Image 1 (cartoon, rainbow, N blue to C red):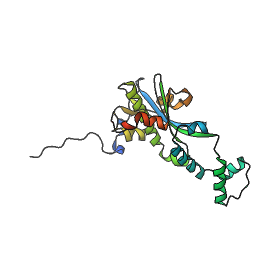
Image 2 (tube, rainbow, N blue to C red; image 1 turned 90 degrees about the vertical axis):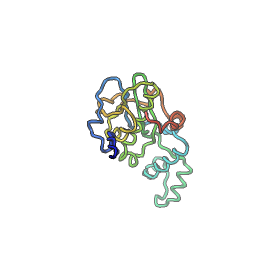
Image 3 (cartoon, helix red, strand yellow; image 1 turned 120 degrees about the horizontal axis):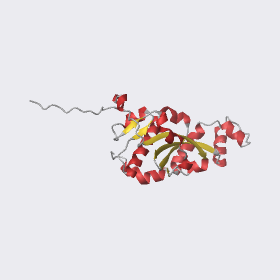
Image 4 (spheres, rainbow, N blue to C red; image 1 turned 180 degrees about the vertical axis):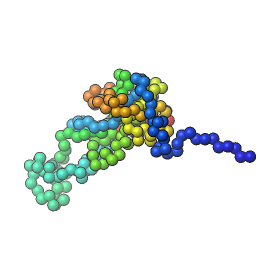
Length: 212
């Protein structure tokens, strides 16, 4: 007689996780996370990314920017139909916006307030997939949990993000927006730690495959 197969209680696909299983009741002792935007200076944003990553963003930014506005701001009058002239102007002028919207992941627990710069905003690119950045916020919370050595829940208000990571990490869950207000309102200037791309890779990149 063949052996009975053990039942697998973990759904094989994220979308199969029942909504009731995503919720973790508030206790007042959890790490709250959120992703969002913060407007900062162009130069400050630049410091958070490698030159290669920054250049990729800059090229994408220019593709999605109204060149006529840049020319007007620079008091330049050139033929907008001549792409070579426009490219030459952009290369010579090193034009850059004064401020940009930075996409950030945030995690808070007691006196710990961590922020990680994820990307400089290009709305047409990021908005349809914003749950991906909420997933990064959850990962930031998981790293904070490991750092403080506390076996406590990590909370986020995006069900899709929680659903995708539900089988990857223990004790992560969903709560409504009002439960993550502290993380939602956190600004970089108030953070106790700000992760640039380089610092994040130095601290955590070798541990991405760990489950905790």
